[in-house]
Length: 438
Image (tube, rainbow, N blue to C red; front, side):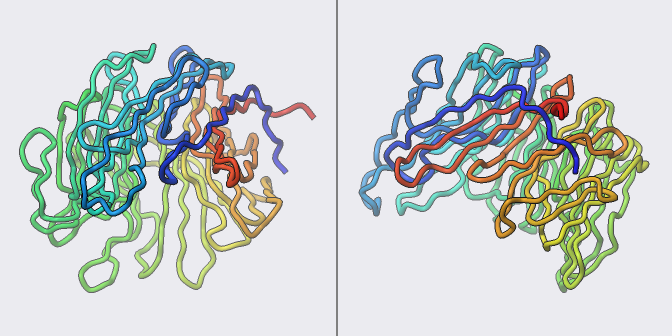
């Protein structure tokens, strides 16, 4: 089997659960990046006060609503958490971004740089109606300096009108927001109402890190809405996307899953259909774009009655396939990839698996300690697809995000579920390096 990596450093914090709902704990998720000095910035959420080692973070509880609030318990309250650590996992600073307006729960969904090299944090916030129903309230953009000072914040009220949000902030100064309009209500990102006469259409909005509008569009036509599943900003404003199987109004598929590239003006450059259109087939795709425009992808294709097909691949900026490596596994839905991270000469992946899993021609064999439940994996491939190392991450740890350093090391961050008896949870950061010495 492929070797395990070395653990270069690790840092964890045990956080006591505060009063309130189940969401009031600490987690790390939503975004991770490495700055030019090799420091790690990672986001998460925090409910209640906590000191990570550089001073108490104050997360106050909101005033309780007047009747007819149906429950006497206080509202769950949650802030976006931002941590910065150096290359040796030493904490440099911690900050919280409190919900804005009437929202009570703020959760990170993307992290990037603005045009000046500051941090851009994108969050989603929820609010509670008078009857206790939780709904999505807004998208919130914050810009932080490299020492953690808040430089600006902007809030877009999305109300009940959007769903299935996907956000990419990997390109400096730009935030790509994709989603689906869920009703006929207007949505204005700063240049007038983004109309949707047919309901359910996908939309894309390109913003600056400070919230300035660069462009917005409804995708597809009333007769052929695009079923976009994953989008990434490529080099020079290009857009790389995967169009999933798109059903028409009679239930048959109009197109199979297709990899599509658009230029900065959203004119189609090229497309490759990954599989033929098959009714009831399901495709899940993870994408990553390298700085030089190379496209990395992991695709899992499931067709009812047949074995899943799965694999990693790389494409040039112009859509030519470079290499591909199949993944085989013993259980249906046994291998999924949540995130890819491109290095200069490597491709790293984070996901879940169940049962025995092999990469390529038997080079990689995972053997989880218990096959009835998923484990997490982190692996790294060299250019060309040859595996370099792989590591299982077993429960109770929840592996949530990875990012690659310039040295091709990998930072992993996540959290553990709270202890049922003590209410204490743990968040962690771990750095994997070259293969451990035998």
